[in-house]
Image (cartoon, rainbow, N blue to C red; front, side):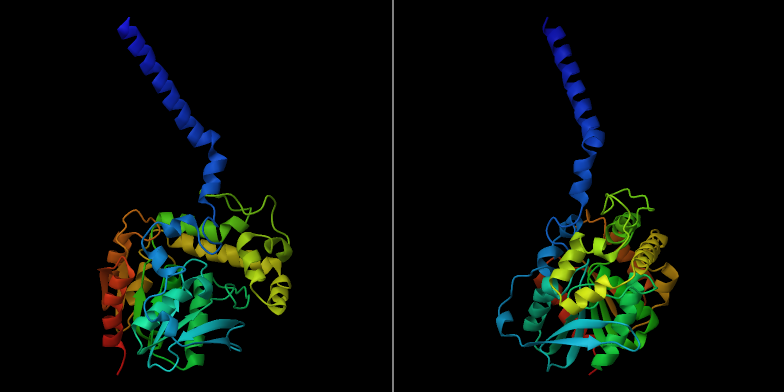
Length: 358
């Protein structure tokens, strides 16, 4: 009798487990997809961005000692005629000598990452810390170019350095910001005294996740594997795009003039930009650094590159193996673990001072 009861209990348990597995895999698919969507923490980031110790360092960072005394100025820098866009720029320690340009990660902007820039400035009074909103983000203008996004951003940064008259500068790229920084390193090495990437994005999982999160979710002719499309039906106007989370937040924080510039844009230009940018990431899914093939990476020749990682091996967007591999390709490069702000400062500040021309 005991044997029979145990057997029945075991059968019941197995059936329950099987039901739960099937329900989780298929029946609860809608819930799982929503969980992968953006906006869990902030409209400019998605859940995967917080799965490491860099999130509180970079995003809405708590001020370090002395940060409240750092002097800052803001500018709108017109990049025309070379680039059809005006960028919002913030400069901390504006009279200091060593120019350090920080490019935020994700779809992040100065509102979210400015605290990190201020903390660097407070920790290094000799550094002029510059952070800016890339095109289509923050308080910068909308401009849908004909090239993939990271290339457009890299070309913008090149002209921004020229406008500010600070070449060669030290560049600090965070995730997607690192991708646009690599474009500058590849095409305009004379702009760079040293490059810091913290962290580096790479690998097939990152290629799939980010191409869908940033770009393909707007395109109904692209099949998605990690999320749903942003709308039920194909987009036919920028007014419809304006109702999606990222773009509605962009419009809310900007002037009527910038809002109208967005709404006056051509939907076909927007969709073409999404297609080109997503496909660009997909083509480099098996390369070391997302958005750049290994041959281009090996051809980079700047004075020094430092790649930092937060130590979390579970971060599939920024695999530590790709960061280490990048240092075997990029000349004059090194890799360090630096999970928190004190370690980041310990690694970066001496590196910057060593490689910035006296």
